[in-house]
Length: 141
Image (cartoon, rainbow, N blue to C red):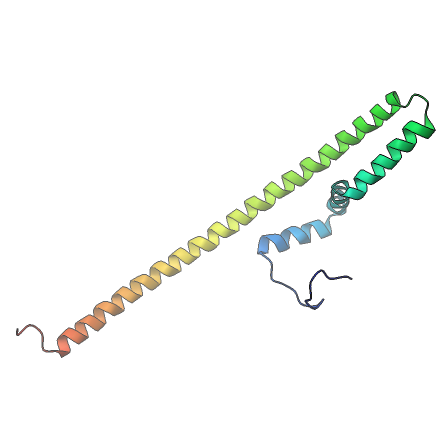
C-alpha cells in the first residue's frame, strides 16, 4: 500500500458519517465496485492512450475500410460510458442530499444548544445583577 502523504498507514482520519456510509455501501455492492472501477479507468489518461493505440491499429492494420465497424464500436462504447457517468451523477446527488440532510440536523441541534446556552447565560446575568445591586445597598443616591 502506498501513501500519498507522510501519515502512518493505520492512522484513520475521521470522515463525515455520510461519507463513511457511502463507502460502506460501495464496498458491499459488487455492481457499484465494478461501476467505480470502470468510471475511474474511463476518466484516466490511460483510457485515452489505450483508445488512441487501439483505434490507430484498427484503422491502419486490421481493416481496409474501418469506419462502419469502428463507428458502431465507438457509438456503443459512448452509450455505456455515458450510462456510467449518469450512475456516478445519481450517486453523487444522493450522497450530497444525505450529507445536506445530516448537516441540517446537526445545525438544528447546534442552534437549540446555543439557544439554551444563551438563555442560561441571560438568566445567570440577571441573577448576578440582582445579587450585585442588592449587595451594594440599592437606590439611595
